[in-house]
Length: 333
Ligand code: BGC
Image (tube, rainbow, N blue to C red):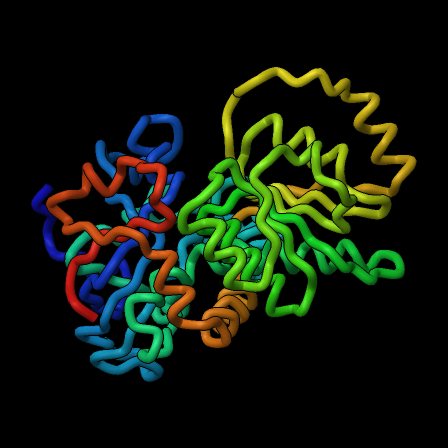
């Protein structure tokens, strides 16, 4: 669609889009399963994994023309609930939060967008296009922070972490866990190709079977598939005092035979925690930036497996088996 120039009320910083990452949430929105247009409007500009270049910093002191920036996705609810009031919009209690490109505010898939200075994150120019990986890295950073906080409820000496799913979230989780110096296992249904290679390049172990067949009990599982069977198997497989952190959003699927009272009994008797994690707060955005800065750039570059032009957005939204992260590229870095 031909849209008017973004309104100054959307933020004092004017940004030229460089790239926008496509993720499962975008596909769900396009399929009509998720997402909300701004009130009174019939369409939503997609895009929540942004990277852009400041063309006019407005009156904001901290930014200058040419800075590379990424936009924070979520905005606190207007009430605000106690969590939003303290800057934890990712933990919003009343569901009245908004999200750019997802819930009631336009996203970043336009040639120019605006952003409020407090929601713009500066990216190290040396990262170039890899800055588009910041938003998915924030999601992983929050999930791992949750696992760490839960783990420390008792003596916590994790040795091996299992990541289920070797998509962008799973691979960024594996990278982040590896940077903590822990043993990482990644499980995915792909048997060959870029995913196993990327996992091995991290010094992590790749598995392509079922979680149920693994020969060890992980201290924590970062579940990144949203697939019912994988989730059920993960809950059974995690070790005593273990944590299963759910980050994938799935629907339906196979009905598993896991009876809830049995799952609960096992969780009780082994002190297990099953925790869901979504979005990220500003501290996690900051830490995610540190993770990207410490990561091997050539490894990160291999996560972006396809770059499409904006006019080919339909192809960008199609998922091909060899895809890891597909980005729509609006301009050169
Ligand atoms: C985004 C998050 C968002 C979540 C739920 C994810 O795809 O990365 O920022 O909170 O969807 O809408």
